[in-house]
Image (cartoon, rainbow, N blue to C red; front, side):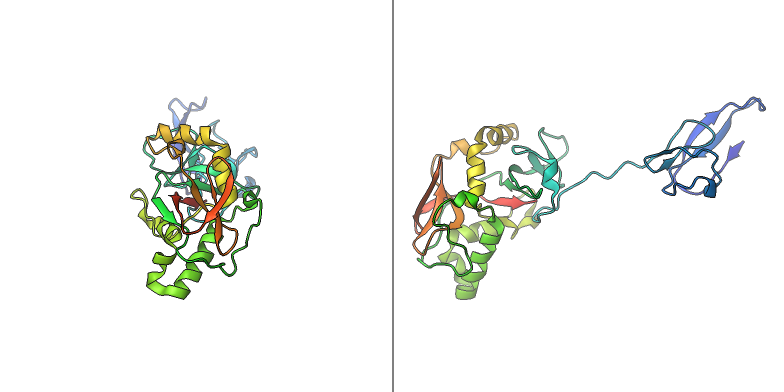
Length: 268
């Protein structure tokens, strides 16, 4: 005897009733409505929004959808991650290498708001911060403590917008570090082009403070370690018209025309 309780997703189970000489099959199903009586159920016990079938102990509950980040946006997902975790193209992070998933970066910063930044799996080379010595309008000048600056993407957008307004399609000649980052399109996820950023001073400081954990993950996925790069890294934090902040083992600044290492970060 087959009994259909109501429409929906179903799982079969077998019940041997004393009044029958043969098994009875019924459908147990998961229902969002917690009012069992309205659906004709006798059992009122709920389990994670799923109603217990009155014919037995079986449940059918849909698998919860895995929480994921939106790459290139600050969504608060990073609260689920740790610095040094691998960030994957599907928007999830893990301390381990996950079979079947493709890495896109390694987590290097997590803010108190649950927003994070992940370091690209490769460096882009050495470039000048800018080839002209101009104090960028709307870009905050850090006369000291650039380690308090975590606005990698806002800084990058400010410079990109300013330079394009000034120079149009030739802007990359004047602000090469920023445009190299802006045009970066990793083969694992080319649709992230335009979403990568030049790390702010505070993010570079976080990278420096967490070198071991970051390099361990980069090694696990056979990517370029940060410790293999002994030179200076440009940050997107500005000091003045002449200087911007750079970093290696500590916070320093240099003339913007110098060529230093550039490696992007991605917000998530």
